[in-house]
Length: 148
Image (cartoon, rainbow, N blue to C red):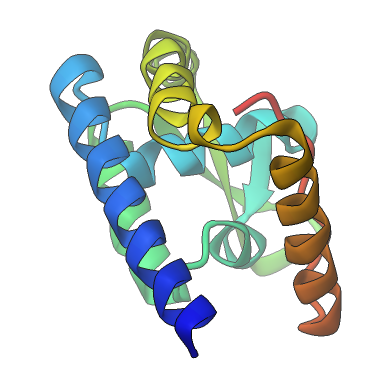
């Protein structure tokens, strides 16, 4: 239980500080950043809404509301799936790509400062193995190895 509680506390604290920094320095919420990263690593810069919801760990309705706001800001557009009328894609726009590129240095610096710099290479490797093992046990799709 101590490992679990410690993991939850640290995760919440790091996500909070990364989100604050990203919003203050780049004007981009962390959830928007995550969506933009997922779209840049998706083929043709677009992903089915249901797949995107799973990748960013949101419910379909939560992602729909998020994409509504991002679409209003001009960072993504929705397109219809030609092979399935019920399917909808989210697609990154040039403005979305620009916003992501502008925010990336802030996010990378924050990960280094608040996470990676406090762990050695062995600890990072062990953490990576542990999260891969848990992901596999839970049936999660492998992470795309994006330069997020």
